[in-house]
Image 1 (spheres, rainbow, N blue to C red):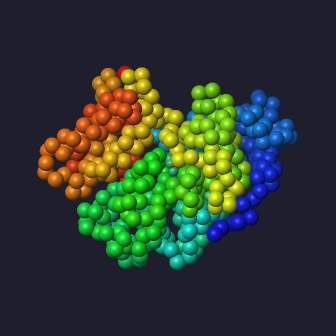
Image 2 (cartoon, protein in one colour):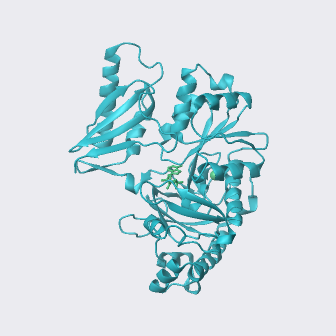
Image 3 (tube, rainbow, N blue to C red):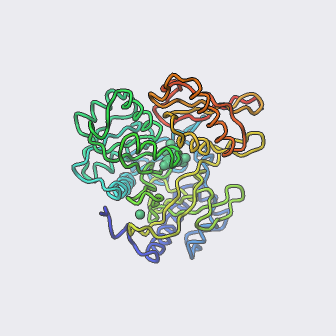
Length: 430
Ligand code: AMP
Ligand code: ZN
């Protein structure tokens, strides 16, 4: 089933032609309406009329999150203020947020792309979506909300946290779908186990959409097993609408990126050079149909690869591999490059491990990995704990080539964030 079959299965050649037309239009509008881009484009000598093929996108300058911050609050706005219908900000890290503007048409397009995603996974009118993402300045909840309403789902704007209330809503209104961060979905699964709720027997849940933060295939399987449902990977970023940019179809084998709305490139993050399909690098996106805030070659910092093979679902929009991490997430420990996802993969694949973990870096390059035990996982036998601890230490050492100190803690002992999970605390003296 498709939300917009013609658009989702558009032949590649026709899709490329559409992209080129939209790219030219976007560049033209950037030059005309955004002084920042006007200057950048003038410096590089590229204009709409000089873009002959899609590869010419590489002649355009990159946009970085630093550019968004430097132009805060409205330096990148391309339309009259009176036509802006929504402001979002990106959660970001510290300092100034990034301001993102949407026109009425932009919101409608974002909702439409989200609708494609939902229908692609089998969501239908009659489904009840419990939206456990944060509502507010963050795009995560609202864009999903609009898309779900467009499809005709009943939406429960629950927001994150307050698991007791989530459970009550879920039971009383027979929620069939949930949208959450993977860390909250896991946490909630642990909460259900503690309460003795068997999701299969006691709830109507069928699918979960998880995203907004990096997570591994092992985490997906763990959520699927704990809740007895299908879990789909949802990728997006506020700079590009929020959720609904790329999403898994029922094949659950990579996320279709809506290429009629976003022009995708994969580059080597160190050199900026383009990489071929199949090779892993940084995702760079150009908006192709945005009014209020078009962005050229935005460096997402997310590391992924394009899956070039056509998908069996029939959609022609190429798929992205699961995000392997962010280029700025990489830790350097005793000279070795380590991604937190490598650690997560080992932990989540290990029976006996619960739903939360925390990596702390201390002193000169000491790594401590605190891991919650599974609910009911401790049988009182200390030697079992010792065995699990040395097993995890060994597996982690084999994966990341650094020997961490593993500490096992009771379920629920580690700090838990309702928004995006904070997995790494860096207290090193550098
Ligand atoms: P925000 O701007 O707050 O919406 O955050 C967007 C960022 O969250 C992305 O650039 C990614 O780093 C991360 N993110 C969102 N969805 C996913 C996902 N499905 N897998 C991995 N990382 C994700
Ligand atoms: Zn597919």
